Amino acid sequence: MHALSRLSESNRGLIQQIAEELDPFSLNWLSGYLAGVAQVRNGGALTQPTSAPELSLVPTPAQKPATIIFGSQTGNAQRVAQAFAQRCEAAGIAVRLLRADRYPTRELKDERLLYIVISTQGEGDPPDDSIAFFEFLSGARAPKLPALKYGVLGLGDSSYPLFCGIAEKIDQRLQTLGAQRLQDTGLADLDIDTVAGPWQDQAFALLDKDRQAAAPTATSNITVLDTHARGSTYSREKPFQATVLQNQSITARDSTRDIRHYELSLEGSGLSYQPGDALGVWPTQNETLVQAVIQTLQLDPQEPVTVQEHSRSLQEWLRHYRELTQLTKPFLLELAKRNNDPALQAAVSPDGLPALQELLGTHQVLDVLKRFPAAWTAGELVAALRPLAPRMYSIASSQSEVDEEVHLTVANVQYQFNEQDRWGVASDYLARLAEGDTVPVFVDPNTRFRLPEDTSRDVIMIGPGTGVAPFRAFVQERSAQGGDGRNWLFFGNPHFHSDFLYQTEWQRALQDGQLHQLDLAFSRDQQEKIYVQHRLLEKAADIYAWIQGGAHIYVCGDASRMAKDVHQALQEIARRQGGLDAEQARAWLEDLSAQGRYARDVY
Image 1 (tube, helix red, strand yellow):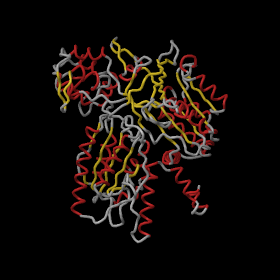
Image 2 (tube, rainbow, N blue to C red):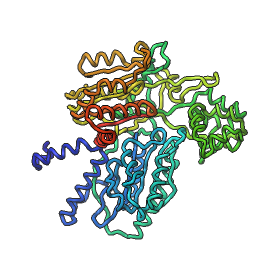
Image 3 (cartoon, rainbow, N blue to C red):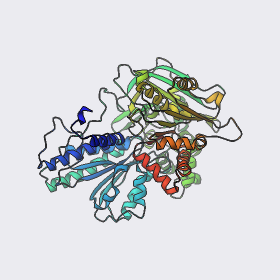
């Protein structure tokens, strides 16, 4: 409070309200904006910062900045956009960086240079923070944009049929509105830098050429807050070898799923995390699968293959560096060049979306190699396969509770295809680890999925299945914080007796007052299936009262069905309890999302 003592009580209240509602990037932007206002009022004078600025978001009044908009579900697009903006700032290029739901759409008609970095969520959907922006751009209110030049970078997953679908839709819409594309739209797979790096290089070269031609006399030197995590040298590129402390199944033997609780040691790593963050795990492929692929193609496992100056045996490439359990459209396109089977050709054709969805949803690499035989060299195979990407798991612990440990809740994916065993690469890898083994990990921050800073705020947590993982962390953290806010958890799974994850912990939390309400939906314990969205509707009046009283809502889990059903249930609650029509209910949820009070971590 001392830092705000120079302000009036009303101004202090306004600032505290803004600080509470804005995300870190928006706070950074605001700090730069206010500093720019101060500079103008002070006749252009501004004290030089004592250290190099992290990001230049506000130019001097004489400059027209390039605008960078990002739309991000888990933080990848945000990090790419931030790195691009930092690079521009370091070269003296004026830019401003905005999250999509913070972008004033009324300004679009006046933009001259626009870069959009956006991820695709689920089956071709925009990330939560970009829904309103995408709807505006797609709708009748979008202005004609003949003076706009733009570039789009999409982030996606080529194991989904509509790979980077939102980026392509935005690119097409901007062209329809008369804008000029400066460069080809980048479509980045899970190995993001392979595409994002060259795309940024090209965009930067164009901006730098314009900067040199304009020869500006001044650039921004606004200092903004540093939000980068410090204290650890470990990262995605340099993971920490965490020791396994516990690997325990937390479902009964007769459960249809093997869900496991892992406890890993971070001692000596310097790694820290917050509830809502994810842990990245670099897996190793099951050797049985590696050998099956090699034998099916009758290749030599020790044959050396060189890719971008990295030379390894075929076996090493497949074991540690290439995807085998997730099929992708680019691989199918390469396979279709070698096999003319009508089913394969139909799947990769422009009109073959249903067939493509069927293949991607049911087959792994080994399955299509057997179904559609073809000749491959070792080099061709490695080149066609997507690089192995780390798997991200919502962290199920709070460091306030577990200190230098990190806990995970992981469903061990196992099934049969054509009477042969199949599995998920990372869940299988983790399940095979014993206590004392090590696993390469890193922390992946998720700033969109954070507890409210105001500990008096209530929170509603909706997490069926392994989606309950971050809420275990939330309850631990809220207990350590000691605030007055209430905690309400909705959890669901097939059966009470076999699938009630962390049952004793939730019961103890209820007894200790750390959890104030628990609603359960065990879908197959009765004739009529009951899911968490049904429990929400049953408690509609209380849910709406909590939200209208300032509660934050969190959803974690399956994106294809559960998250959509919960989203619809929340809108139905607004219609029933708030008297809103369908459009008003949709806008109500969008507003909660923009405030950071409705957050989803879905996959």
